[in-house]
Every structure is written in C-alpha cells, then in structure tokens.
Length: 382
Image 1 (cartoon, rainbow, N blue to C red):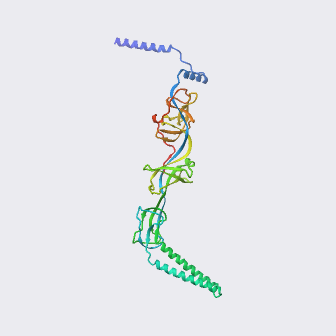
Image 2: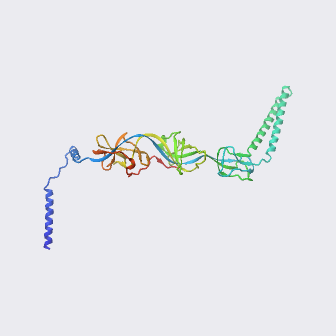
Image 3: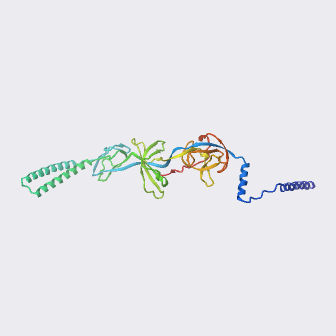
C-alpha cells in the first residue's frame, strides 16, 4: 500500500509541475482593443500562413442555345365520325378497321331503291316546265300572255329544277366517301343494316400532320414563338422535327401552364397518336462555358456557383445557372467570358482568400462527378 501511495504522490507532483509550467510561460494575448487591431491581427496571421495551393484551368465562353425541355405527347390532328345523310339499307362497306384510305374513297354504300325512278321523274318534270316557260315567253312577246301567267310558269320551272337537284343529291349521298386521308379507327355500319340520317359509318382519324402537345410553365412562355423548331424524342428513340404552330393565351386551371402545339410530318402514318414524347425547343442564345458538375459548389446562402480566381490570385465566387447538360459536363452561364476556375481544391478555399494557383488544361470528362443536379428548365405534362 505504501508503494501505491508513493507512486500516486509522484504522479500528482508531476501534474502540478506541468500546470505550473504553463502558467509561468508567456502571458496570454490580451483581447484586441478595436476592430482595426483585430483586422491587423488577422492580416498578420494570413501573412504567416502560406497560401493554399490549388489547380486552376482557364475556360472561354461560347455561344450556346438554351433548350427548353417539355414532356408531352403526340395527338392526331382530327378524328371524325363519318355519318349517313339518308336512310336505307347498307349494301356495301369495303373498308375495315386499320385500313388506310385517301380522300374520296368509298366507305359505305346504301341501296338505291326507288331513288333512280324519282330522279327520272324529276328530270321529265323539269324538262316539261322549261318548255312551258319558254312558250309563255313567246306568247308574251305577241301580247297573248299576262305577266301573272309568266310568273307562275317561272315558279313552276324553279320548283321542278329544285326537285331534280334534290334527287341528284340523294343519289350522290348513297355513297359515303372519305372526307380526308386517314386511318379507319372504327367501323360502325354493317352490310344488311338499315340506317337513318345521322347513323355512323366509320370513325376516320387524320394522322398527317401529327401534333406534338405539351405544357409550358408561365415563366418560360415568353421565350416560345410560332415558327420555332421543336425536336421530339419518341419512346422508340426516333427523333422527329416540327414547327411550333400554336401557343395558348389562357392557362390551364390548377397547373397554371400553357398548351403549345407543333406540327410534324407523318405522311407514312408511322407515328401513332397518344405516345409520350420529350420535346426540346431552343429558346435563347447565351454565352456559356462547359464544366464538370464536380466544380459546382454552394455558397453560404445556398446559391449554386463556381469558385474562380481573379488577376490577383484571390478566390471569387460566381453564381451560375445550368442551361443544358452533355454526357461529359454541363453548360453554365454566370462566369466571365474568360475565367480561371478552381478545378482542384475548390472545397478547401473560400471567397476572398489568396491562393497559390497551378495551371492545368481542363478536361471535363476526366473529372469526377460528385454533384447531382436537376434540370430546372424541365416541365412534366401530359
């Protein structure tokens, strides 16, 4: 027990001696008496500490197009239910669902029944009234016919000609023809069916041109103009091009977005209606630089930007905006036309700090991608 007490006493004495040594050393530095004195001390510490070594690369701005990306869909230009204008028995329907037809092709045909006989009768009546009217005019020149009789003869002629025209139209309406080129989506009439005026024959869909439909946010609406070229990527990977033809002037309720339309060529009917499409429209030209996403940092205020150095080798923070991305980098605006960006060590320095730069060539594909970004200009709509 005595040995233990002796060891503890020696250790306690050594601790007291060590503490006393610290107290007896140099006295602590008194607090700064003013802000000027505090700044002087900070500057002195910076001079004593060597500047941080970083690697920088010089990049130059080029003209780039900002592309507005919209999620949309394809839509057929029109869909019409072709109907009968007369009643009768269906005797022919030469088309089936999925058939491609051109304007003027026969879709359905109704039986003639007694309509040809009525046409012959109307033709004979029109010829008779014409002869009577011409005879009345000859008698009128000889003073043997009154004006009233001539007027009655003329009215009879007009009535018979109208009935003849009606008979001819009724015969023409026996054949229900395609009003435009398209695809038969539905076939409603069947041979042997008795139909009345308004009965549907087929549903005809117009697929050329095809429409691209999308929704644009209100803050992007001013950048879109009729005539701009829209590029759409379909689920199959096929890219199609079209011209913007319509921009809505009223917003959709609830979403506060505006509809736009573009026409794309679909003369071979290869593009179906209703498929999703990623639509891209170049909306403005900007001066931009291509960098790796790994160079993007956040300021204390949460603003996305890039750290660069000025002519005095002082770190400067530049807020940037991503306008588009590629497989090997992103295009940003907000940097000077010629900028020396920090490519190695950007996380170790802050704005206003003096650094010792080493220059290197910028290769965006070789830098690690450690920053995941979202395309702020992308809009989802269906």
